[in-house]
Image (cartoon, rainbow, N blue to C red):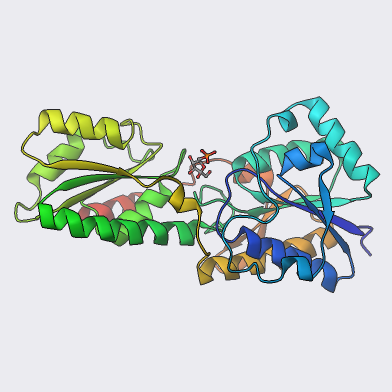
Amino acid sequence: MSKIKNIGILTSGGDSPGMNAAIRAVVRASLYHNLKITGVLRGYEGLIQADFIPMDGKSVANIIQRGGTILKTARCDAFKTKEGRVLAHKNLVDSEIDALVVIGGDGTFTGADIFSKEFDFPIIGLPGTIDNDLVGTDFTIGYDTAINTVVNAVDKIRDTAESHDRLFIVEVMGRDSGLIALRSGIGVGAEAILIPEAKVGVPELMHRIETGRKDKASKIIIVAEGDEAGGAYVIGETLKEKFPKYDIRVSVLGHIQRGGSPSCMDRVLASRLGVAALEGLLEGKTDVMAGLVNKEIVFTPFSQTIKHIDAEKITPSWLKLVEILSM
Ligand code: F6P
């Protein structure tokens, strides 16, 4: 029998579509198991400020389809300090919250890992980030929606690029990872994809464009924001200087990638992982993230989830695929 009676839930770091579906799943699973569930507002900031709200079945009604997070989110520097974490722990004890579910990405799990070890406090994580840059899950909650947002936007850019015979450089999100760029780039039929993991510089990029088919009216280059080449505007300026024959335009998609109604894939992923996380906590699991690998629920220690580059996710065969398809 688990001693856990009251579970706190929070979202932290950059939001992602499907976080609300995950909150809903954790709340409903808690109620199913006759547990109290408490919402923590604005991530670790709310732990430090004791900004807690009781939750029930109704508080998560009609949110599965909504982007963003009803619990709000923040990137919290105070939680990186010992004093901040001591205060957070005191607030949890005072409110009789005896376990946490945290939904977020690498920053969230770094904090959760330290906190759960420091205070021997049960915590389970859910992968909520559009970047998909966590080890221990094939897909993170929000990634599918984000790449579909990119595909919808770039399809529109392709229409105008084709009409004007233009080369477009489109920057997508992914501070430390090119996974959004890679998949959406394949999805839009990009002529080239620049990602931090592949180290294709501007000279090689131009060689590919120059030696590619001459009868293409438009060219789309997808750049991950974390790419070493310096972002879409820098690349655009370099290309304009070196290759004045191209009519070049730049588009930075930005935060539209983080918003919007979650796709069905993200809703179902969030729902499955939310229930699994809650049940994992009751079985005594802690300091781990619930993820989905090869269709199975797996629990991976926080410390192993945050490696940034998952060799399984960007293999040479993916890069070869990009090259073949851009012919
Ligand atoms: O971690 C998700 C993410 O969207 C990254 O892709 C991006 O670099 C970052 O968040 C942007 O963060 P912020 O909204 O704080 O500027």
